[in-house]
Image 1: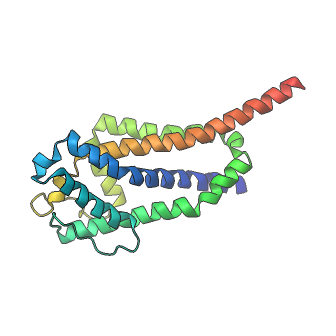
Image 2: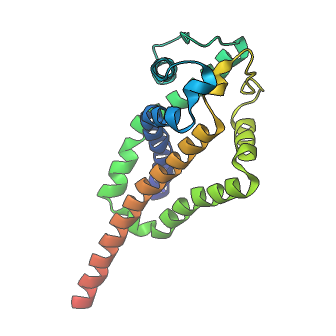
Length: 211
């Protein structure tokens, strides 16, 4: 029972940690996307201005003491501000769980539970790949809609470009890139855990063979 609780906590930690790392890399990813999708031409704003506004947005989303969002060059409707507030709550949850559940990672490694949950780790690694396959089959735009309908109870995430022009630069491709980045980071985290267990299991098996 205790080991199962540690493993469950580890999975939650892994999800939260992958989200937190994705947040960390979201800024440079947006900087790249500015040039990939020629966002200055789309928005009529310079790349420097777009970077500044995105930095303001991210500072609001990841800083628990930043209570008000005011984008310098983009007007925001009440619905958009509410949505960003809801997103902030999810990000705060992810950042908090990364810290709070970190003892589960330490216990999992210390007690070599990767050996016991070897197959469980394989299943965990396979889950986001399956979700990614579903997203590819139904189209990322449809997956994006389903994702928001699951995690958000209202329709404030449906931005109107006329009242919330920020959506013109937060493109579908950018969100797809961040989703792919999350999956890669998630897989990397759990692959390392699986690999550590596999290595330990091989040593254990080799030791028995020698005896």
